[in-house]
Length: 193
Image 1 (cartoon, helix red, strand yellow):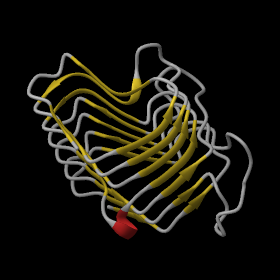
Image 2 (image 1 turned 180 degrees about the vertical axis):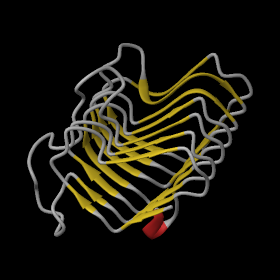
Image 3 (image 1 turned 135 degrees about the horizontal axis):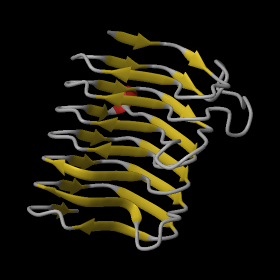
Image 4 (image 1 turned 120 degrees about the vertical axis):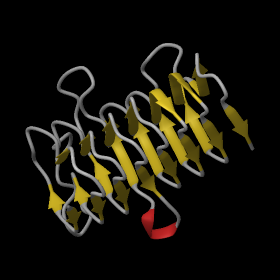
């Protein structure tokens, strides 16, 4: 399934929600802003910008996401992917996702394998810029994170809990109120550059 080029504002749940399937492409959507990228209202997405559960080989690229709001625990991330294999979030140039004013995590991964989070621009996130929990083979590379509030004590702009064989490379972090990068109980993690 392809979800491409939509403009979504003022939801009481997730802006885009994908459950199951394979090879889903979610690209070029504008979420939480008007089509001309002008302001559509504070916290007007009352859920995750993009939520993907159980969809293998998902591609999430070139989206602009803003003004998500956390209405409950684990709600309000810019991009939230769980229970999936080989998700690709972002990429070079026009494939980068741009996230700002996010009410939970910028990009959140849970129970994933072989995910790649690459070249996203993440600004002003309430909790963690990029979070990976219980993941294997995750690559977090070439992202730019600024003005992270990191409201969780002990967390960082990039945070991992559990998992194995993670690569965190060539990211740029500026003005994080918590740690820059925090790795917790993740074996085989490589931190470079």
